[in-house]
Image (cartoon, rainbow, N blue to C red; front, side, top):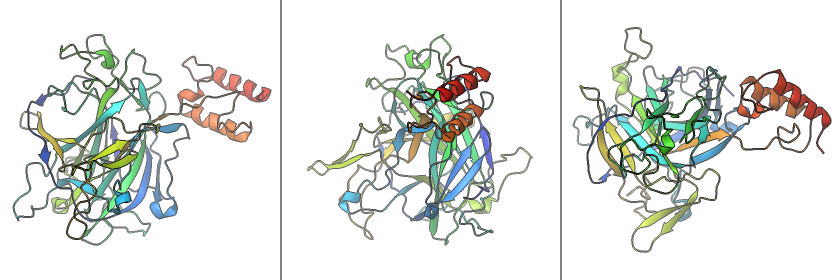
Length: 444
C-alpha cells in the first residue's frame, strides 16, 4: 500500500436554497461513447474528515477502503461489462471534459469544457451515507517519478462531486427543486502514466466519517427532522418541513418522489476542471499549465447488478436485480448535462442524453464498439452497517475477544453511531463502561 500524492481539497455544501435552472423541454439527445485504451491502475481510499489516504494498486489485490469496517454498500452501479454474456468485454468511458479539437478539426463544442454531468436514482427515505465510491479516466499526461505505479498528480487538474436531495434530473419535473447536501473537490488528480494514445483510470472510496465537528456524513431524504446520526441533511427546507415530505412547487406531489414509486429521488453530479483554468488555493496564481488541458477526462460506464435482456424486437433492456442489498434502484438509461454558469452565474440545463439505446449485439470491434452501453455511470453509496451488536460481539463472529474490543474502540474514536452503546446520542465513559460490562459478562 502506498500514500497518495495527489492534493485533495474538501468543501461542504450544507442544506440551502434550491438551485435555479433555466427551463427547457428538449427531446433526449444522442451522444457517442468515448473510445480509448483504458487501464485502471489504482484505488484510493481517502477520509475527507481526517485526511487519511491509502492507495492500493489493482494488481496488488486491491481492497475496499479501511473505514473501520462499519460501512456497507447501500446503492451501487459498478458492473462495467454488462454484455459479457454476449462476448463483449470492452469497457467504455464518457469523456465529459475534453478541450482538444473535434474530430472534424474544429474547436471544442460548448459542452466540451466545464460541463456538469448529472446522474440519478431512487433510495429509501432517511438513508445515511458515510462513504461514496467515485472514478475518473483521463488522458492528461502524468509522471510516475518514484515508479510506484500511480501518477504523481497533474497540476491544476480537478474534479468536483456533489450530492443532491429531491432530484429526478428533470426526467419528470423541469422545475427542479433539488437541494444540495455535500460537495468535495479533488485537485491535482493523478493522470495518465502510459503512452500518449492510452488512458489511465482510477477509482476512489471517499470516507466522510469523522468526529461530529468534522464529519461530512449526510442523510438522503430526511422525513422527520432526525438526521439519524448524520451531520448534514435537509431537515427544514424553509417552511418547517423536511425534504422528503415537502411540496415546494405546490403541485400536490412530494418533490422527492416525482415518479410515485415510494422511494426518494436523489442525484449526484461531477464536473472536471482543466489545468490552467482555476486558482484552487487562492494564491492569485492559476494552477497548472493551459497547455496540459488538451486531453480528455471523464467517468466510466457501469450498470447495477442485473441481466441484459434481448427483447427480440431489436431492443434490449437491463433488468436490475432488486434483491441485492445495494441495488442501484431508479437508475435509468439516461443522464443529464448542464452547461457552465453563464455571465449571470446561472447553470443552464443542456438536456437529457443517452447513447441510442442499450444493446449487446452491435457491430464488433474493430469496425464497431462491440455493444451500445447503458447511459449509467460507475458510482456507489455506502452507509453505516445494520449489524446488531449483541453482548459486545462487535464483529459478529459469536466470539468475544480482543478483536471486538479493537472494533469498538475504533468506532468510538470516530464517534460512529454503532459505538453509542447506551443509545443516548453522546460518546463518553458510560458507553465504554457498559460495553466492558457486557463484554465481561460474555454471550449467553
